[in-house]
Image (tube, rainbow, N blue to C red; front, side, top):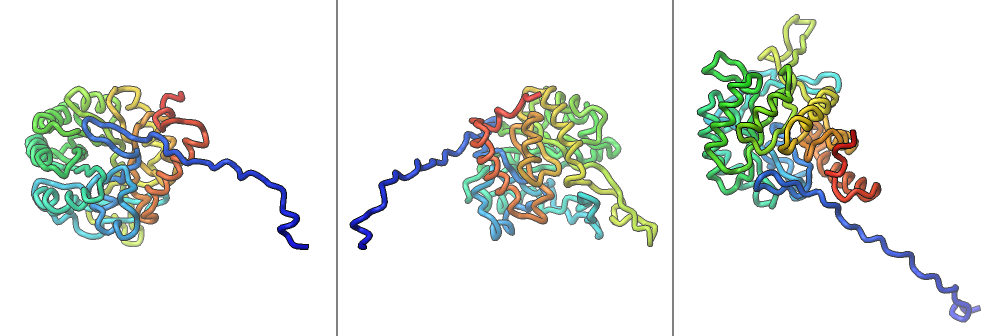
Length: 321
């Protein structure tokens, strides 16, 4: 029998589920992040290599590889060693200097229509001010992240971020030099990180980011010497995440400016911990070494999570406890 004489009973098509992206925009001063997932300084270069692997336009922004006032060759090898659930590095801020970074590296990022955040390191408060002025005058830079884990050469080598007075002076110098958003990247190697965050806020920071790496050492027991030529290095990766989440929570309660969390974020659940702890955005770092798409995967997973659980924004996750 012909099928057209006995058609199947009419069944209306199921309603189409329309995907509506959640509101994940983040504002820090005059900078608008399209979503709260950035890539961290020193782990993504300036995007040139990663452009061959992922769509950079999907990112909330790129925090550029750390730059200094003058070019630096970095430390001698060995400079990197894997650790249990982490990575120890002592690259030594190898970079071409701020002039080339602003002239060549920043424009590359801006062609993708996403924020470019320059990460600056300095040996004196005056140098922070000079670099902030140069970055502030560059149209391709959207914000400045200050790495205050650098040693103050004029003050005996103590890191800026471990001393209240030195941190205050460095932030004041940078703030006076530019109107662009200023983010202070806090060192975890302190007794009271909430205090340091308040110092940064008091002297003009628009936001704080944390944590920078913890200080560690790996010893080659066969040679009975440190693996790294510099002996010590910065520990990153999942091993530091519980420390980073705890410090993010403490800082978010202590300041009124936005908090950007980082430290061992590999997947959505990791990022959610930072949001719940009080962060408005996060940076993905070490994970991109073994999964270049980690940040993009988290962006997609976050959008799905917010829809599934009925949240209008990831910011609604904050203050759960």
